[in-house]
Length: 409
Image (cartoon, rainbow, N blue to C red; front, side):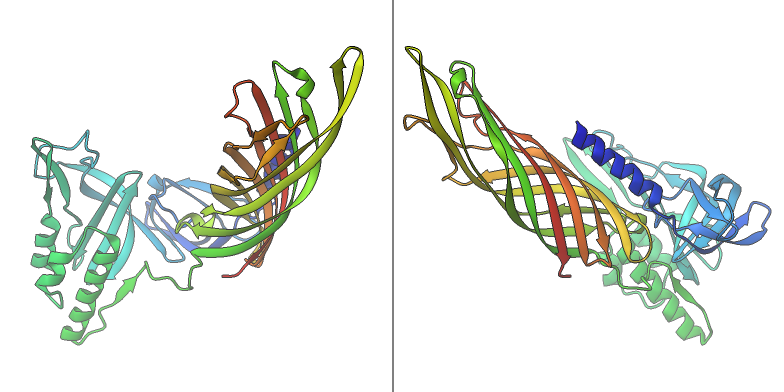
């Protein structure tokens, strides 16, 4: 519990110390008034319901519900509030509609601009709902229609009306084959709308723009490989309900560990979330001299020993707290799958021998990373069982780790 409390305290400290980075942006209120402000750019996955901003670097942070905002922009993000007709038909198999046609409802939504030009492409995303909208020459905004529907007997059909909409309204530079192969995805729609706008500008000989808000101004680091050596402080206790004289608490030992971490940075929320897997070699070796009652008023001594090595595979998630452009704290949580070597065993007196078959556990960590290259982490692993193959034996293997890291790329 003390170790968990320490981790919790470090997490609170990291949260407190992490600075919120605000970027130059603008807000247009419902009266049409535009104000230059500094906006917290969260690289939203879902269309936001509120934003945080400040009037200057030294002013207080304000929160504003997006119902009170007609438009705002920051970085590569631009959102506008519009009244549109949207079909919210579910894609879940248990809730799929039996109707082919979209079931539209008029709503006022905050839409994200993906492409701005002669033809605009916008999107709306909330949880499992993802819809794309478009308009040409500032006409009414319409949803690009795609819908799954149930045709009975467990069969699903697909309404791909969006292909007809593109064919009818975007007639410059788009081939029929491109339309037929277009998926209902941001990538395919961005390509199609960009080609249409560029073709329209060329044929008209004008300065028709094509602003791609999805384009990255800088290359985003999405995948890291890190060498992670470190030191484990581990201890083991074993017990037997029927033979309590064999209960043994082995000492805490320091052992070297080495791992290779593969980390994927999620493309939202300013690179603050990631998933990782870290195959790691670790070992533990200890011995203990014990005295016990040998019967007939005799006291016997024996040396009990343990040798254990394994490949641990933590699979987890990580959250970063940015201090500045070079420094960041992080916390992570992982489920650890352990593959113990066949040579792992515990030796007792009189040639008694126990084979180790380790169980899985969880890991909690807090750390610091500098310049996206060097890192250090303190990690706590919950107790792990060694002797589940034996009915009357219990065991508890505990580990805390100090792990250093060097990111190769």
